[in-house]
Image 1: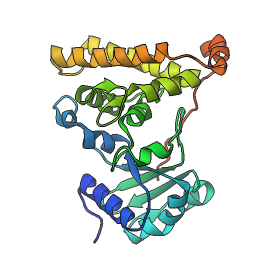
Image 2 (image 1 turned 135 degrees about the vertical axis):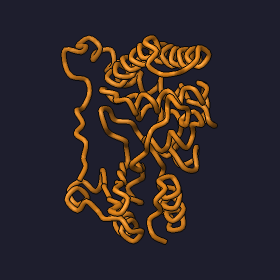
Image 3 (image 1 turned 45 degrees about the vertical axis):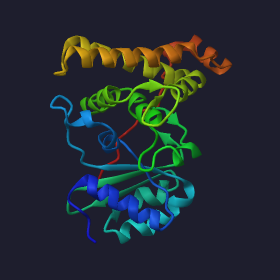
Image 4 (image 1 turned 90 degrees about the vertical axis):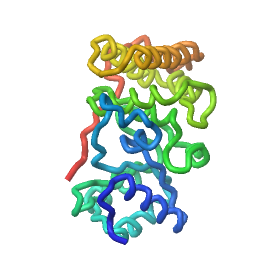
Length: 252
């Protein structure tokens, strides 16, 4: 079968074919939010999903070097050769899309550990806590990132478990170990609240209050979690020293 023009159908084809060959893939990025969020089609939150992003483990990453070309994708030979044990890129020439694959931990502005738990929580995507973190850890949120986070917060409760719930224990635990991650999330929670204040999104009062309450629940859990010694020492330095990695987008 050739590459499908519909991005979500193509993503599901890739995952299905990967499972047949014992290749582990879990969806991350904007398309993962759409899969979980009915509100992603809300007129205020609707957007395009041009690419497909996955996370995988080391063992599966080796198999991808043959697997994705066999499905019709063109590899970024330079990046895959130099950094293929951490990240791989492939291109859909016909539909002008790319597949971005993160191997092991998800590293952008901050490092998010992708442990074995992501194998067991969701059959298609990373768990919702990690999905939230994948966007909330971006220091310079763009409009699409904001829309994804808002959709996720509208459609999912905050709790201390998974099962279509944003597991706040995972978020709080990671923030308690990493002052930088805590700081970026805190700033982005403020930014999202500011966007709600400005009425930039066509949401009703009930929707707006739901988002505010869920952001407050996350922040409360982050603040309440006992902090590590390293966290406390880094907090003394504060924002005088850059607390995040600068990320340069890799495209063709």
